[in-house]
Length: 272
Image (cartoon, rainbow, N blue to C red; front, side, top):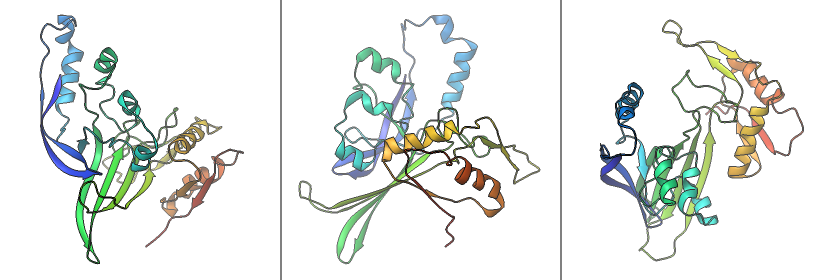
């Protein structure tokens, strides 16, 4: 069992404290119903070693009272409680806590961990004190390192999907009404089947386009998921370099050429 033994406050949203992990500990469960030979198996030792390499004190955050895995708008508009929050693509310990949550039929003994970035600062503008909060939530689906994870998978999940939210609100006494603003944007790999072969001798490996999905069903699944999460219209900002024009053409022309219920607008790369 992995326990968070020490925490530190890194911010607050609407009176709800957000914490980071300062220290964690792995504790063996004695008299476990799991077979003893499994506990000492080769695979189990390998999984323990991999888990021990994860530094929970970096980039993980949580809250006991605020659903930090969701945007402010979703928290205000939907009255969701309990186990529903663990279905979020941004809860990284969803699988590890699945057994105990299913057994107890609640989440009282677990804490949902979000992986990404959280920073809150206090600013003074025109004599008014405000708090600016920046949250980046990284998806646990199809995550990986640069070059090793690219494009989309069969379920419409794109590589390195990150939701970024900026929350701004006034610094007022607790219980007093306040104005609050939230802006959310999403970034991820281009939702096509493509890859790049890594090489120490080639710092910019060529892009390999696959013909695996000629009907672009995975691309459609990706945008349907975006509509379900954020609603229409979906606005695409092209950040691809001009030298990668073949990938641009495939994405903005072929993958969106069929009739659809989705409202999609594409914009070229913006240079500042």
